[in-house]
Image 1 (tube, rainbow, N blue to C red):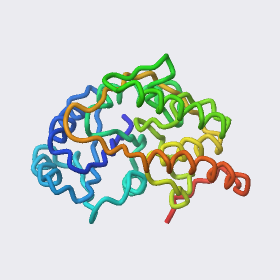
Image 2 (cartoon, rainbow, N blue to C red):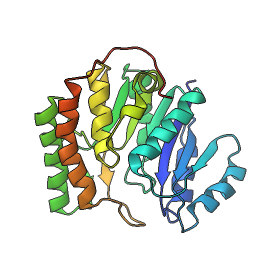
Image 3 (cartoon, rainbow, N blue to C red):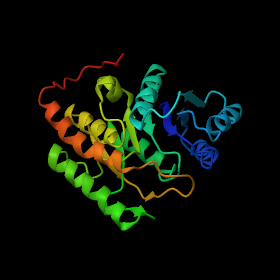
Length: 249
């Protein structure tokens, strides 16, 4: 059985954290969980420490000094997971917008269908988003259209944050060279994986807006992604994407 780890960044997720952790550990396939907590003032980290007694050796946590951005949280988690020799490394939100049961489908896409990167996609089979206002649905959908126009990627859901990577993929990427920190991080990761020629598969999911807690999406995050994509594309003309397994220091 392959070693799986789900990285979940948290900031003020006390309403969701226990339930999401329990849901992952109740799946038929064995997953470990790594929480990256950015000094949540609501006690999220304290709750995780309590749950570590219930799930010894399976529930891990890295506490950071403050809000340092989604991208840096995942980069921190990727490096830790590589060092600890996990085979499949997942990104997932804490708020149940991603159904934990879909982790199994991402696993199967990699293990059975040879995906190097499996994306939980909201748009590969229509628009599968629940409880979003129409304006946000349109913004998200056309953001992916925009990214495809600029980058020429064929990925339908370029901003998806529900992803599985083979460890070899993350070992190949120069993680410290990933520049975008907010939702643009998700675009840059997919673009970089694509440029290296890895096999990317989109797995249809239904995305459900969070029931508890507060969304972290802001206009500034969206603007970073819009301008960041152009800068990312231009920078790619001056880079070489050679498949060598190199963990960023």
